Image (cartoon, rainbow, N blue to C red; front, side, top):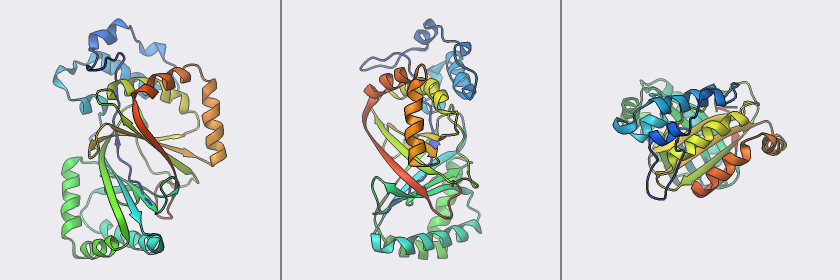
Length: 298
């Protein structure tokens, strides 16, 4: 099958101590005397500011989502499983769909669109800044849920879009989506128009109650992976399957991916990040994605 994945918002997870049934208190974080100065200041500015802001905030009046993500945008991760014989037509019609959508009042933004090359094939993935479920597509909605609602009204009521949807559904085996937020310590998901990359989407189903701890360790670990512009987006699910985290990475080739993943083990602290986060995972998947011709992430 062919799949498209949609990108979504990233949510930072944060937790320094963990018990089986409860989240740690912020007083316990302060007792550990974490200081931004203890972190290297390269591309780790986001992780440093995130950790320090966590220590200054009173979590009693804030939701987990507000603590992990500080942007207004939401993301939609769409996955479409396309019948193999219809993949070419699917891509052509989806490109026409984007052209029609661009002439409406929808404020959605398709950040990326991919075909799964290694993993669950015959799937298309797309990311929106609003995020809608299409073969691996990533959508972004800068205005948050009001923007998503406006987009859905247009999507469900526009004559040409209705015709597209009816035709598209005949080509699909199934489809699914998630609405996500972006972790505040990851880079902002943005187009990469003049590049030539393969993308890896690593999705983690976490144990309930461990999202803060995940964010805490990755806020430190991400700076070790930021030297080659590999990190693209870090998202966590807000609607759909919950306790999900998605990390999107960009590499020049599979060999570049292999080398980058081997080299990071030489960085002090990476082994601790891995050892601390593996126990938080229920299961995980990895997919290699190739951008479509119309994807804004190349």
